[in-house]
Amino acid sequence: MTGRAVPFHCPYCADEDLRPHGEQHGEWECRSCLRAFKLNFIGQLANPATTNPASPGRRHTS
Image (cartoon, rainbow, N blue to C red):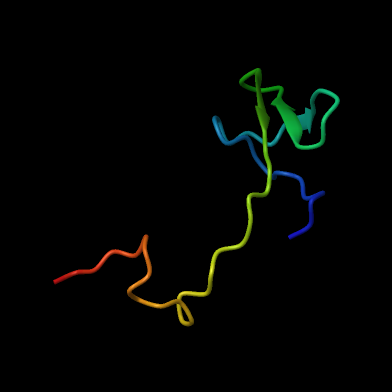
């Protein structure tokens, strides 16, 4: 995923009338519901096929 990807719709109202907001990258405003929000990339998740099933954070069903 690129750091410059743009959202396709507002996470609050799902409208597509989005525009950049503020001075920092990742800040957007929705002209429909008048909300401003920020998106950022946290990181990639491990592939479940190669992850140890006993690793923390995985739930086990008994």
